[in-house]
Length: 339
Image 1 (tube, helix red, strand yellow):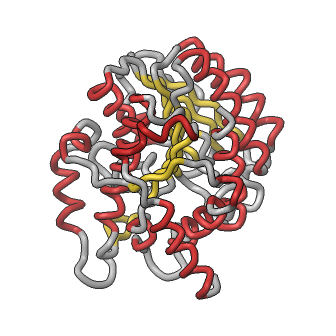
Image 2 (tube, rainbow, N blue to C red):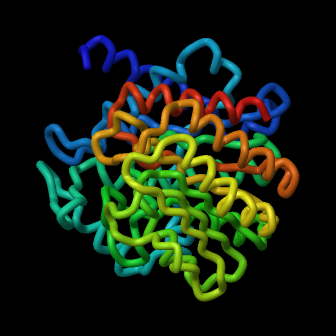
């Protein structure tokens, strides 16, 4: 990325996140969608040439700086509280991550998780951004929200960081909605190319949580078969095959995911918004385009409008070709703004 573009998008991140969460209520009448981000997410680095790199977020913020997104509410992602993190993770997990951060260079926690000195703060703010988005949406300060933060979260289990993920932002958000806002029934819909094994594990036995995922299979992390249905029949997996495109994706949604979401009648919907099912993404083999991400967003919004006053919190997960990621996020956020 040219130096001037990098500088521009960093300024955009800082300017775009300048609104205080405290003033959202006064402004909620002017826009329906909240964008939550923080420049700390640009400092997290997993190593030279790693696919989960700051350029992903630079590209997104540059796209969302376009005039057609001028109506977005914008807020900074705060640090997640320990109390909120402990709803989804063990205290040992929190301690390991807090002490693993290196002073210089990189610390490798596993084959696919690496920290630099900024990672822990970025991860805390990624989770904190999810919490802030839930607060805003549940209070009615925004109709829905998109959290543009990294690192992603849906692979992190209760005790193990994995798949570029440190804290399970979706699980933290869903459990916060329940604890802080009396949202008794929470739904997580995941359209990342990879199955969200961490979300599935955390909610496996939770009768008041629905986890529904489309994903490529076989593919990392190897979970997500149709017969993985949870202890309370609360898990819905709709795996797709390598080479599947928009038609197969929409069929999986129509036949398996959306009917279950509608019947579940949640109080809030959390989206694991991964865009690595895109045709050109280097880590997947599906063939979606930006319009497919717009379509799934609108379909979920239709159910959310009927069942939970439109309350949706969307969390950035995968998407590793920055230019396609930016276009896909723009389509997704543009759809959210139509609420």
